[in-house]
Length: 264
Image (tube, rainbow, N blue to C red; front, side, top):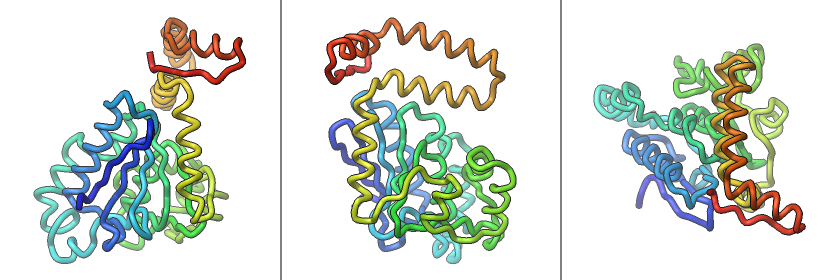
């Protein structure tokens, strides 16, 4: 079976890390497959939302430490091959996540540790199972959040809280993760998939051009001054005014019916 499974449910694409026997610990081949799956989803106009999750009892336990201990794979002697290629090119999953215009919801079904935590932070939204935990134990392993955590944590939480979480390295249960603002909502384990699909379907029912443009402008706003950013917003709005989706949105509102957006 594939280590990264992909399936569609309407306009929602499910991407599932699929090494449940290893708590979905990441290998070099998984990184490549996941990156390709994310890019393919972003390129597919029929996909309006991606749900990223893990099979079994974990979201992702991080890099495969058993491989590393054996001198194999990422983090071991194999770093000179698959791992080094991953980190020395632009083909990095967390970079792809940040570039994607298609919204991605991280469905945290179980433990998210190390690289798995960075992967979750790279999603646009996070829905967490009441039984799941976040494990930012980088300092306890002698490493750092190497795939986005050092960028996301201060932006999500502010400097002091980012330091608290990363430097103490304490495991966070769902209640703590929600109180910090690391996840959008917590769902009972049995209702996690249904909650994620409800969110995804609601997003998929909105205008895809507007959703994609929101993501682009959010990214732009992180690195630009207000005046420059406002100019980009104006140009985007003018383009959207010319779209079929905008006309459908106005018409459906006037006719008091649900809109049917085509992404045109």
